[in-house]
Image 1 (cartoon, helix red, strand yellow):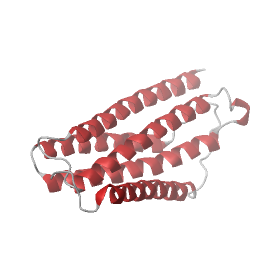
Image 2: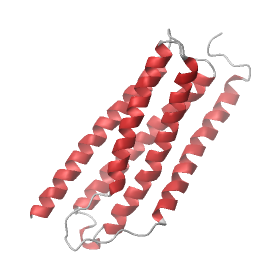
Image 3: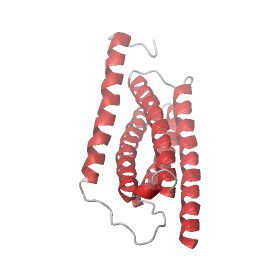
Length: 194
């Protein structure tokens, strides 16, 4: 039967836990490694500075979104192996997103002026970027779930709702991130004008 596996749901739960922990550990390790490259240089102006890492994570979100759309297309057309490979790529992209986002958040914290810790633009950016990362973490758990179920032959051309849900979650998080980036860019440009 489609979706059944001889090892049962207990084995699935263990795999889900292991892949989720692996993504978090890899992202944390890579993010920490990036922070060892040295602190960012403080600008002489009080204007907010966006880390280049946030622009890179924007690209990763776009590529991940396209990858998830491709995965949905492939499963609808019963191309199981390329479908599974797309999910693996999305898993890696999501892990890379987290590691680079960790670096970007660290970068903002290092540039934070202690006198503006509660009201400055960097604090605003930090909160919204952190909230987005937390929502993306939940989306990554969905990707892990769908990726593992795909390897257990759960999805086919008749049933792929989980894949569609993951793809739309990724798309929505990408749109929200673009809105956050837009607000950050406007806030930075307004600060530099003042």
